[in-house]
Image (cartoon, rainbow, N blue to C red; front, top):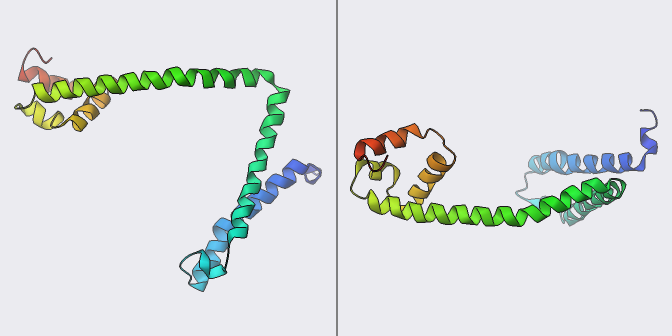
Length: 153
């Protein structure tokens, strides 16, 4: 603990945290006490915005970590590869929700359940997502659908 200031990454991180605290809390308090409406109260504060870019250098630590542990890089490549499949699965889910929302909106147009849960396509998609896909309290709309007609249950 005594040798913390000898570690340059610790010093750099501490400097970034200090600048963030100064920018967020102290600068805001000064601007409110002066009575300015925006950043123009302290002149051109773009130098502080430029200091934010220094925070990006922390990403260099990630590259050093990836070189030290190649297994982590394998996991990251697997996650990136799986992202495409997950994206297309979500697109398929959205398409199916849209198709069934249109069907439920048309089938239940003049019913009590239709006015509550399926009044338009957007509400039908929400109802099908929350109650049908996520199974959040599915008993309430399912019981009302069953009372409406035995084919709906």
